[in-house]
Image (tube, rainbow, N blue to C red; front, side, top):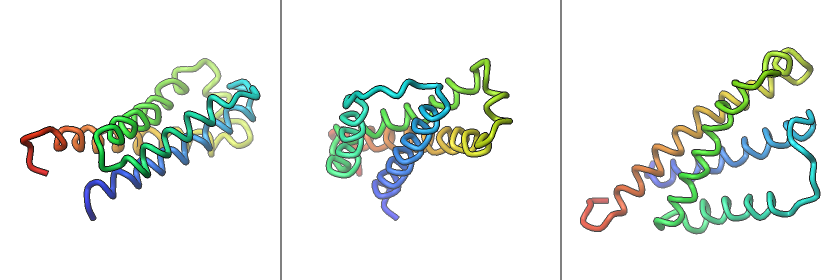
Length: 126
């Protein structure tokens, strides 16, 4: 499979897991449920960068950010004071699983997008 195809799939899966996890955060009261369209706009930009700009440097930068956001989610939550309580609560398995999946997949997305950016530099073999 082409490296860029793997990057796009990893980025899309990271975005899917990010939306599921953020939704879980809102349902649990960790994040506020605000009627703001900014989060929707960010989601559109992340999807556009992944699906439409995937071959361009700007798309790789956007996917790099997706990977960074996804990989950072477990770091943020696992240091929280209520992490153990949430893990033991109803739905805690899903909460913890998405954190692990986000960490691994986000790290992969970050690495693949950084490699892709490196290979897109002028004078580099593709």
